[in-house]
Length: 348
Image (cartoon, rainbow, N blue to C red):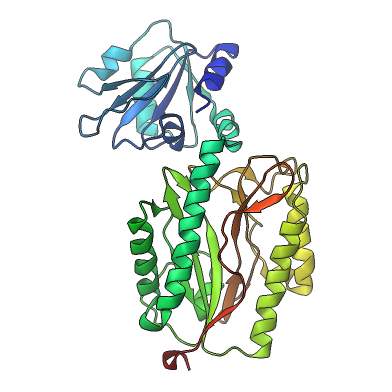
């Protein structure tokens, strides 16, 4: 997983060691595993993974694996190491103190930006994992739509999706957001025991397959919608599809954001977050849409998720995980975006 590229970077910048901990998504990226405890030590010419004896020792090409023991600090001491690369976005103060204890003369150098950039462009197998995660996510949505008449609360919906996703050899990419009616006016609403009733129901969730994430948001209507409610949904759908139609290699993400907002017209003020984000081993990673220099590139997956929110009333968001394949935009989350109505006596 591009470990040789990182080693070339370390050598060029005279960095003797890159040190990553088990809580760092970059360790997951390079090793393609998620140990319960451990460290990844990368030098310009070798890589060593130290993990807990509670974990199964993996076989990873280009990385030597050993178990962490009580003398691990002493074992990795090296007076020749004076420049250490760290992921400043992730490293704890406690672990930083440990490093300075082990290497008292070393200078700590933040390589987080390099790590993010390495992960941005995906390899074929990474995209296949994301595609699989997206397929399971879409299938889970189709399944929960059929089950909605039998569910009573936001939590019931979230539990159903989690059970479905885990039954397909996946885990959750992030905590599922299920928001009924006015709850959806809060984009990061915490799923609650709020009962399902007539109105818009927003579901934002994703599966995680072999460490790679999907992210999708769909809205369904419980009961019968009015013409005005349909118009709100169609306005947002037009905003999202227009942004997707504008995706081309080299286009700034800020431009896609402007396209989405332009179709919302005076209601663009109710679109209170970014249009999207990169996605991979983390559900939010590079590219960052607010970066004026960030542009659509081949094999770089991202989300497109405009939303409109009206405090105390309702909120709507439509989101897909997509990427540019060199000639067209590929939408990986294939669940229908037609406004689905659940006509059941519970939602009158």
